[in-house]
Image (cartoon, rainbow, N blue to C red):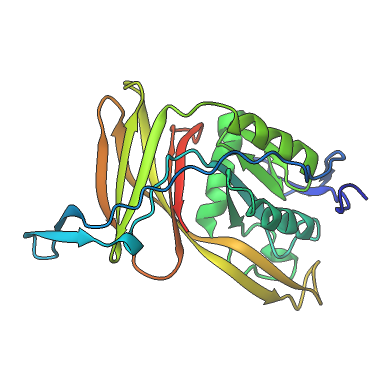
Length: 284
């Protein structure tokens, strides 16, 4: 036992090969329960702020943003993407680890369910081919033939075995220590989100602006496959990952985008590849 978690090896898939080959991979680690928390960024709640919002008919209307509608963030969250599957017996410890990460104010932890283990007897209720494609894109960018579960991708750069808690904690600390060069602010007005970003200093680099929607919690009773008989609660389950704009960071960025519904919403600004995530914030 390490830090209350038993290390379980991950399942790998050679997605470029002629056949899908599963094998075991990993090394020992533990969750760093002493993880140092940085001071929470002050949230600027500006009652009565005035925003220009375009109506559906195309006419400009002035809307007063109420205090309850505003959440501001500096965009400094460290994004952790967990690639997981309900059909993977190695994944439950990583799913539990992701839930622990949610208490860390530095971290935006997201659960990405993939579909390539569905043939093992249980179809993952949250899996989408688009999430498998995103994981494959990370592998291509790294020149790697393998994708596997559970895998965590930290900051869009570092790819780790998802239940190697010690390695994940150390990587989060390293990313949190890097000064941010993009300031990101999100403002909710009704069923829309106003996204504002600025690079400090300006740069001619281009980035993808992405809107992520996610469910806070979902419990599934798994009836077949490797996790048959288990009831597992998943947190921050991603339901959509949308590329909403491209931004060349020579000047400020502003966009109003639809975001109706009760699901969580996060904005992630990332170099193409996919590669480095330069800013991320969530409306919690």
